[in-house]
Image (cartoon, rainbow, N blue to C red; front, side, top):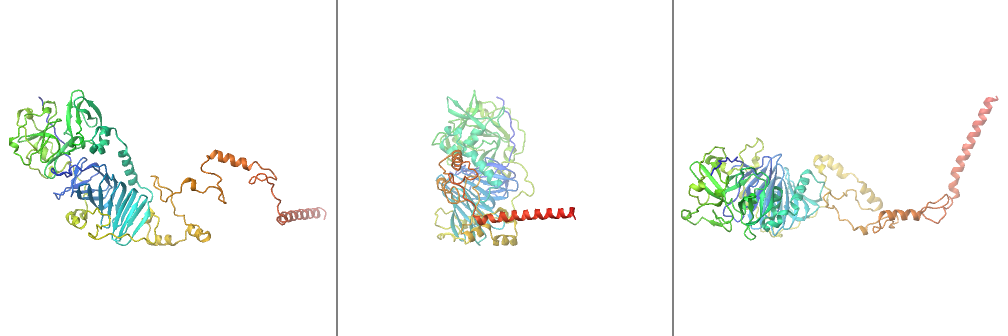
Amino acid sequence: MKIKALLIISLFVLPPSIAFSSLTGEIRLNLVEGDVQVRPEDTDDWFPASINTPVLEGDRLWVPEGGRLEIQLRDGSFIRLNENSALDVLRMENESHQYYLNSGSVYVNFSGKKRYLQIDTSEASIRVYEMAKFRVDVFEDGRVDVSTYSGQVYVESERGKTAVRAGNMLSIREREYAELLPLGSSDEWERWNRDRDRRFSEKRYSYRYLPDELRPYSYDLDENGRWVYVREYGYVWTPTVMVSVGWAPYRQGRWVWIRGDYVWVSYEPWGWVPYHYGRWAFVASIGWCWVPPARGAVYWGPGFVGWIYGPDYVAWVPLAPGEIYYGYGYYGPHSVNIINIDIHKVVVKEYKHAHIRDAITIVHRDTFLRGKPVEVKVRENPFLTHRIHIGRPPIEPVRETRSPIIKEIIRGKEPPQRIRELNIKRLREHRPIIKEKDISVMRPGEKLRDLPPEKSRKIFRPQEDLMDKSQKKSRDTEEKPGDILKKKFGRPDRSDERRDRDDGIPLRPQKPADERRFGGPDGEKIFPPETDKPSRLKKMFEDRGRGGQDNSTQRPGLRLPDQPAEEKKGPEIMQKKARDIKEKIKEEETTRKNP
């Protein structure tokens, strides 16, 4: 059997995945734009990030200028970072996550499926218990803005707590004051997030074939492959994107050392679920296809392969359904935890896919560790001629083994010094994760007090940040048209009201249509809402009639009253003056002709 030695182009990887943790696979990097970087908790080095990299507690993320990052949680929630943003994963507990936003902007689409989410900043702590979409902005001057687009979030600052509901924004200044304001107009960052939300909100075709735990990933499978029925396995998924002749699973990516184990990081856009859940099968009429796990048996794994290694090479082959995976931890049915067993007594005769052409991937030892493309020549199939190794290869990782992508970061894109120097362990001590709504996060152990109401609640104006203090003062003190109306007629000031936002969130509650006022100055309902517009107009003109010289169109059937006599004197006097002037002009012309 001819084995092709393949070189894996190494790409930098990011982080986390404790082989023994039940939370491994809870979070992954779903979209990476620009020179996004990550620093795993067990190292001081920052590495370029790659899609499909797992994220664990203690990991740090940095998105430089021109970059964007999307993080997907297992429950279908999304966390997105804009450029110049730094996010730290403080805690990952069962059904609870805590993050710290050091700077920049984060947008959260929280599914609220029996989960708790807490995002802390230097001046505030935001807690979410139910489904919500919101945004947190941390500015260089210390200001924190919390904008809610749907649902509601609970915000705590030094002055107290308040609920920020859909359509509102809470602006917190550095220990000075907090203002609850209506949302302003949407910007490009918000519109980009809404577009991303729409993509993932649609019910996908893959829903019917996936167990409940994997349905949030349906988008990846629908966009990059198709489902086919196979008699032996039922419905299976086969990729149609980034596959070519000679392709095999676990080839486009790299093995990355993450918290004590080698974890596969795929570069394919669909490469999260098929490589960490279920098994792969080769069907003659289809080719390679992924067999999803059975319902109730969904377990994340670092990569379900069998291993063989030599002095200068490392080889692996995808496991078929039913074959045993030997790993450092329990990864569901058909897996064995080898932590407490003698692996030398375990014997595996052969793997089913070892006989499939091009199924085995072989790389040089330096390629496996450092990502260097080094050619390796293997004449025979090692899985047919050598003893199969139990568990991952016992190769000591180096610095480069922690990086899924081999590339240089452009100068100036590295995290700022203040980001690098942040002490995560100390931050955890001062910012506990608190699920109780009435207990303070910023003052642990104390009960929360309500945020005192502000006397002035201004309408948010994006251009306000561009004004100097004198401009703001003159604008705020000038008398508005609404104030004049209020003084003169007792009408409420509605001059600052805005139209509803383009995403359907009203700034103020609207009355039902049948309660609104229609018609003229006397309040009569000329256009009742229950009638259609054409019939209203037709009836109005029929009632008014065509009129005439002496007939009224406003009050059909009545004659127009004569104008009062005193109001007629004006026109008569003017006519008399005009006649006098004409006569005087004639007299002067006659005198001129007959001197």
